[in-house]
Length: 164
Image 1 (spheres, rainbow, N blue to C red):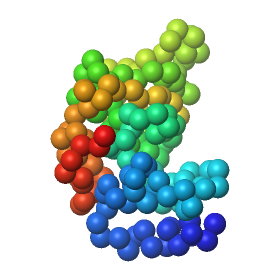
Image 2: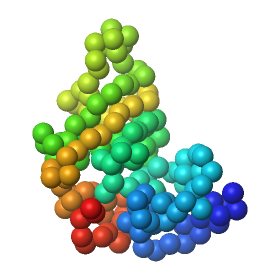
Image 3: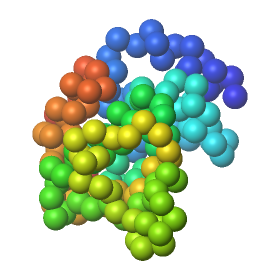
Image 4: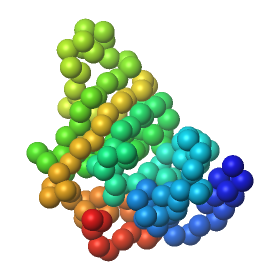
C-alpha cells in the first residue's frame, strides 16, 4: 500500500511520461512488488486517471486488452477514442470484440451490439463502454501508436524498438 502511495505522490513529478513508466510488461506498472495486491494497479489508475497510465503499446496483449471506459469521464473517453483510432489504423488485423455500451437500447444489446460508425468521429459523453481489443502482432502499427501516445497522452519517452 505504501509503495502505491509513493507512486501516486511522485508520478506528477515525472517529466518523462511514457513507455518506461506505464509499460505493463516491463515498466514500473509491471513491478510485481508494487502492484502485488489484487486491484493495486486499478487503485493507482483510479487515483491518477486512466489517461496518465494508459499503455498504448500493449493494448492488444492478453491481460491488457480488456477495457471498461466510463464515457462521462474525459480521460477515459480519450482512451476509448485512442483504442478506436488504433483499431481503425490496424485494419483487418485489429478487432474489437465483446463490445457493450450501457446506454444502448435493449434490443440493440440483444443483437450483438457493435460500435457505431459515428463513434470513430466523436464519442458520446455518457454510458460505460466495454470491449476487448485484439490484434495480430504482424498488423500492429507501432508508429501510429507512438504518434497517438505522444500527441494525445503527452508521452515524452517512447521506446524506439517495437515490443516483442
